Length: 495
Ligand code: FUL
Image 1 (spheres, protein in one colour):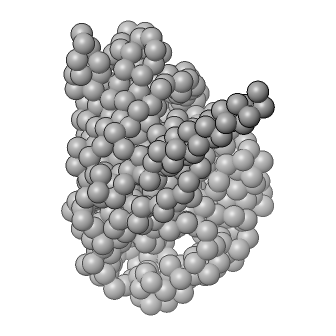
Image 2 (cartoon, protein in one colour; image 1 turned 180 degrees about the vertical axis):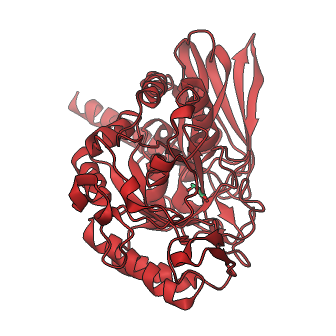
């Protein structure tokens, strides 16, 4: 009998070898070539943030203004119970991964004791002139595991030299202070509002600047690169991420991560910032900035106008869910804390998001793709379910419109589909469609175009035992990192 056993074993092992070659198990295939502009490491880290917050806080909080003229007495800045941990905890509880503080807004008042001006917290009664908001917020971020970013307004309505070359030296000195004394900074936010009337050291006049040339941005950006190489820089035109073109927090559909950067500059045209441009010469993804209240700064008369949890959710789906990052402003009040109404709205918003994304209903699906690159495990559809950005399903180079079927074995009910591309290979897919298996046939329930960092398709509830993804237009083979299905929890009536 041993001879028979040996023969059987030989037969099985050759059968196994044939099968392995057929499905390509264990074999390797080269990854797809990148398509178009691709993100830098710095941009990839920024994409992973997805949701962070602004903190607009300065003399305006106490004068009830949105834009201070620049002649405010430092003594007006006097929060009665400033609590950095309360502010940062509010951001953290909302699910934010970082906060960006207005270290200096257009009024020129500095929230840190800058050695280059008297117009700062040092001359305010707060903490007897010994306070430093930048220090307290950045330290609290470190304690709570949030990243810290700065907003340093280029337009300065207080400074006597604004509009002249001397002001640039002042601005850059302040940037250096902020980037050397307060630990790690994940982003520097360069605002585009420019020029006009102001105090300007007592001149009280109108100063117009040419925002294409005055700021000499490349030399300011190089300071950030030198002192904080990991920081991603924002402006209307990058260099690392762009404004989305509105202050409602809504990205376009589509919202491409690419843009033609030639001829653009901070404070310049907002054409196509909402949708991005395809083809585009540069990877320049969008940030959606919006305030939780009508104003950027706290105004007591807006306490009843805090966005509702449902409004915040709609914004989330139209920003993060369209491949952008969401920068949601939480303005501290005159006590120096985030108001209770804002905290409550954020808590319910977070509860709903957590309940939605706690369980990926596709995680046990059986996946069948019309093609897998090289037939290898390395690019197999199961990579779609592991919630990792670095593994992905890809097809052979000549297969640009593949299908993928997810079978659940029993009906599942969902109303949100998530898709993510593997960004290091560029933004590839141009159109996709989703089908449900209904009454014995495939029925389309959604279609879309840009995917990029994330695409959340949110619609009516669907119950089905099979879902199909069709890539319907792509210039190259797709590289998809994630495909998930989720169900929003039931919500009460009203908004
Ligand atoms: C704008 C500013 O003028 C607003 O005050 C606010 O800071 C917003 C985020 O950016 O350009």
